[in-house]
Length: 79
Image 1 (cartoon, rainbow, N blue to C red):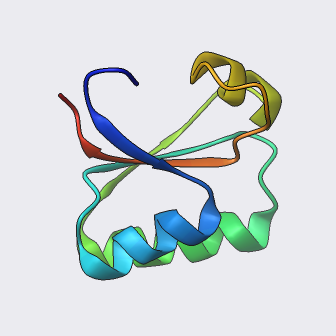
Image 2: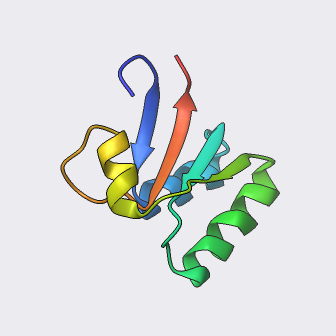
């Protein structure tokens, strides 16, 4: 999180996928199925990898070093 560039949230993730700027998408385990399929569809179109995080959105937010829930995370530059 500190050395690379990433975007947090569904809207920013979808925006990056449409532009083709994302390299990897991380989705929390308890993200609603409709949102998961929408992200996976755009990721397939832009040929971006998708990783399903084995934890809740609260766990993903803690892993990112944030004090709020994070359901989706788009990594632009791994650093």
